[in-house]
Image 1 (cartoon, rainbow, N blue to C red):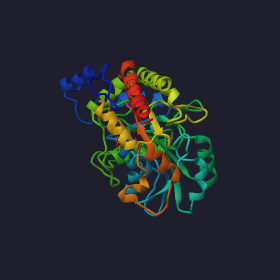
Image 2: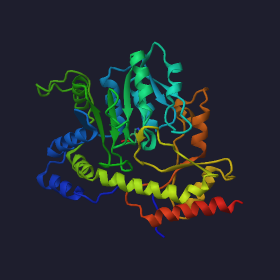
Image 3: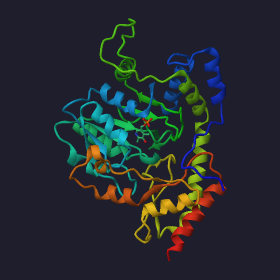
Image 4: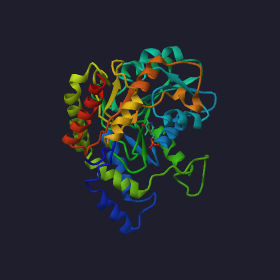
Length: 369
Ligand SMILES: *Cc1c(COP(=O)(O)O)cnc(C)c1O
């Protein structure tokens, strides 16, 4: 059997046609019609009034934070269980990420653990919809209102997910998406900042384009960045967006098949629980190995690799990584991370491939008895 990759982009739509159009028309840099089309299409998809494209999901976070005026001396609450970019973007601004423990069911930041981390320096709560599972936003928004904090949604892993019927990315003050090659939709590398706030959108636009005055060319009013997306990336993005509902549905089928085929292994495996009131998108189907599994997580991953199945460990808690090591412990996040892995999840996976992954897991876990 061919190797089964943990993720794969699905480029079955107009991607090639639109990219060819860029090449033939010579509009290959960060000007051109696809940028506007992708941005307006994405804004209407997530139900925000603005969508601003940029070069990747990490700089999208940097732009969002800087547009809010967050900087040196400020603190931003961040989940301890996330991808490193979430914390790094806070550091780029000079602010300090303050880590919040995970919820043992949803694996997202636990809203009940937020308030104890708030200090007079706290400026914002940066939530992450981990692996496509929406954060429980109601308590987060309530705390933010009470304490006068901004809310930023890092929706890099959750395009199309909903919380209480609302699109993720449209709930906080400003939100970000990533279009890296393994995300729900991709532009190769790419990112988007979305908001309903006109002033924030103008700030992001200024910052991502070298701080140039929109009314006066080559007049730079602030120290900005070159964080622009290219027309080629946007061309791919537009084609991806045309197919997003189909791609999400295919991912959902993969998820349902995993659940069906692994249901009887629930003495051995734990699954990520959808946040009540939400409709997650299955970015990465993930399992935790219970204590009843005598193998270490890495041993199981190695055995799967030998069977041609690529997997990923769950993210390490950020406070275990060298730039962020600290004395504080996060037992929930640490337990989830040490026993968890992402299984192959993408919209091109066949039922046979999912079944093969499940059968191989069953063989490994069954083989230990
Ligand atoms: C992928 C990801 C990012 C960063 O996106 P890039 O496009 O890779 O820079 C940020 N946050 C989270 C949670 C991610 O998964």
